[in-house]
Amino acid sequence: MTRGFSGGIFAGRFLFFFAVLAATAGVGKAGAETSVLRHGHFEMRADLSEVSVADVMILANIMEGRFAEHNRVFRFDPATLSGPLRVSVFGDPGGYESHVASLADGEVPPGAVYLHFASEDLRELAVLLGSGEAGIPEALPFQAFIQFLRAFVPNPPAWIRDGFAVHFATLDFDSEGTPFHPENLAWLDQVKSMPKIPSPGELMRTTDPEATENFPGLAWSLVSFFLASGGDYLRSLAESFITLSPANGAEENTAAVADRIAMWHDMDALAADYETFLGSRKSFSELVDEGRRYYGEGMADEAKAAFEAAVGIRPWHHVPFYYLGLLAYNRGDTDEAETFYLKALGLGADEAAVTYAIAINAATAGRIDDALGLLEHLAGLSPERFGERAGNLSELLRGPGERR
Image (tube, rainbow, N blue to C red; front, side, top):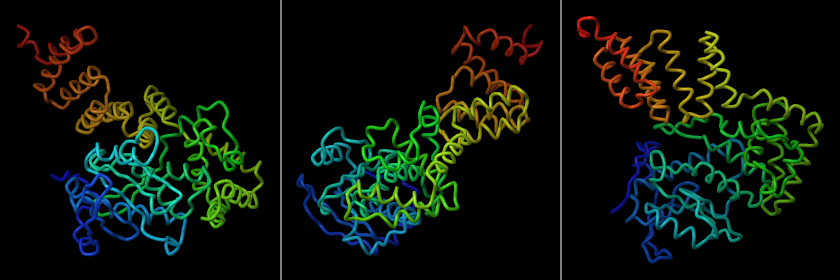
């Protein structure tokens, strides 16, 4: 039986590609029948007893969309590729793990991993469908970029490899296949909290990233600096890509890029601009602290902007949503307040505190029975913290007639 995934991305478009994908039967290492589906720059391999043809084709469209967005930045010539990029697709976790373990040493990365070998025939991106939101593994964006870059430049500079992989980790597509790419600020807190941040010159010449603490975050911050600064900084970055050679080792490519960028800029001035840039960026914790301060001072618009910016960095964190609920309640929008409270609750906020807020919100909206039910639940949920308050509010909501 095949396993499907809900992948809304490009889901409405897969029938078109059915006409351009050709399937051929083969035998995998474990003796399973493998189908090879070709589309664009990719060769998709899958055991169709595990995953459906439709799911493989949806993934092929996703990969092709990512390829296009990556190349909007790098402008590599696809004609230089010796063949399509291989993607091995799995629907069974055990099959994925055993396949990856048979090709690479160490722990098997969850969801997706790019496996790079000296021989191009062995290189592949292994993907486990059904292991993330809408069936797409969380690791896929990062690993898909690594596959793209190393297809053109097998030994790229470490900061370009890791920095752009983090940058593209937030690239996504809507149901029509249109890309949207919110900035990936997930590493900003870690970078800004470091006691000493290496200079851009040091980062650009790093050939042993494991020796540098928090290297992926630092590499991302440098990439973000070049992309956001524009002007000569962006032009020097784009020009440096031309120096990358598929025939060079990592040290040669690293030096070539660093030397080219140094031809454009005084490196001390660049380091100062980079430091200023990092200082101007607000991390998640800074935005939350700022939002709380504004909230306490009654500056609702400023608080709302701070918490919304915090959501943009960590949309999975409950704190900004809770405060956005409080702000919505204060301006009389009880429907929006409840939406934010429930979002915060679903993300792991203190159940008792949020239940109390939802109860007050329901009472304010005139939904007295709902409020009383929530307060009764709250009294049992946290009697020490909220028992007395829940009882007093329930008594007030019932009115004099109910108390007699």
